[in-house]
Length: 288
Image (cartoon, rainbow, N blue to C red; front, side, top):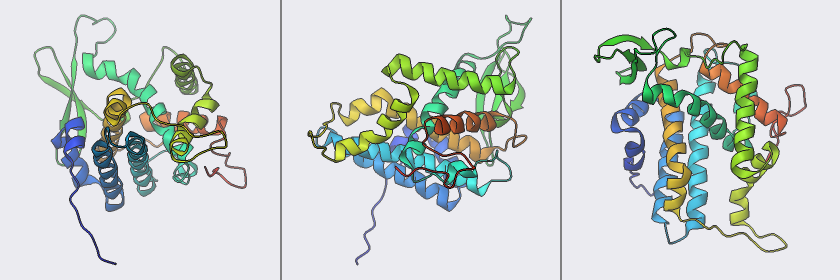
């Protein structure tokens, strides 16, 4: 079979996160992580070519790009098992569409809590008038967030993976429960679905575009451009930033920090919706 080579443009992902961040990812990512990201670029590029030509196939390409970025994170976790919270049951599920497609909704809940701090700055109790800004800084080996004072002077660097979402005087388990409930409430408000229905419909959307059922088949209503503007831009951006931060930092402990909190909520979503079986069951995943 003749080998066909072609170039894959990184322009779109560069526009989302900046050339410096994407170059950092390329430099730091192991081969098996980077090629997942390259395939996500390929899917996104081909999807945009399908705008107003075959928007349904374009939608399928965008979904595949999201899944490839999630799998690149799974691959990183597998390569750094000793540094990260216990996650083997999750990453073994990389072929399960429900598992892959629920990664970003959980991530988005945490991002919504953290984003105001990054965009608007922070202040401490008793010093509310003294607003400090947070500025990402990229060097050859890490991505850190730096606190700057009101004059723009750098105060202290922060490892983003060492930070923790806290809610008043709640315990870590209570915080995880609050994050889970926030996701459930958001889905109910936005889609009027319970969590199980949302998981099923999100993972089955691709199949319904591809295949007919006894009563007919579903057609997509949005163009690729609309799908990007209404969600996939932010999905890809936040997943790429997640990859960059993971590549450039280590948690202070496998059981502390944002990664641990994320995995706690993510696992609960998958178990409660039966997208993944408990560890004591004969099989840990449900193929979909």
